[in-house]
Image (cartoon, rainbow, N blue to C red; front, side, top):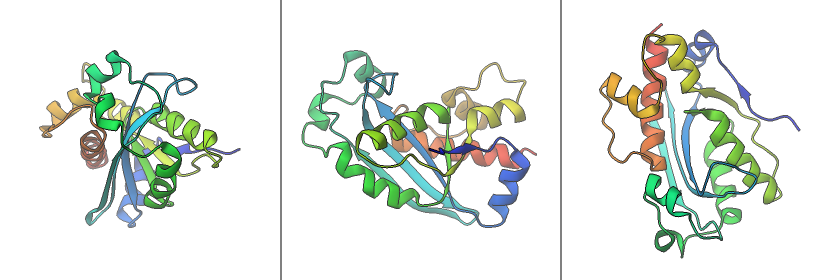
Length: 186
């Protein structure tokens, strides 16, 4: 099955943006690092185009298993916070409606896409086929002089306000801002 195509050509992304294409910056928080064994616990997303933000999406998800302490230490999401939240099966239709056919934007897109696609597979859906952009790759190509290209480091470099690091909606917002800075750097 065909999955998302990562667009690494900043010129092409700039043209799509200038032409009014809708983009969706998104981020996930998870119970661990391996989508085969771990689960999503939060999805945050922001739809935007050349005129600004169109809509926001943020939801906590009950993973159906305990959140390991190491994951909670990073994202500050606890079992108590997700206990009464919806399961992923009921979240995915709304998320798919939200992203529609937009170009997806994520920081280390392969990670987030692999988790979303694994959850889609588990729930009987097809994988995402949207085009996507990876802000790690874009930042490395546009700003190779930086010592690293972590999202928080890029936010500091660009002077982007980080309100709630390692929470999905705020990371999606920061990712969107980094993406826009990368487009404007060329």
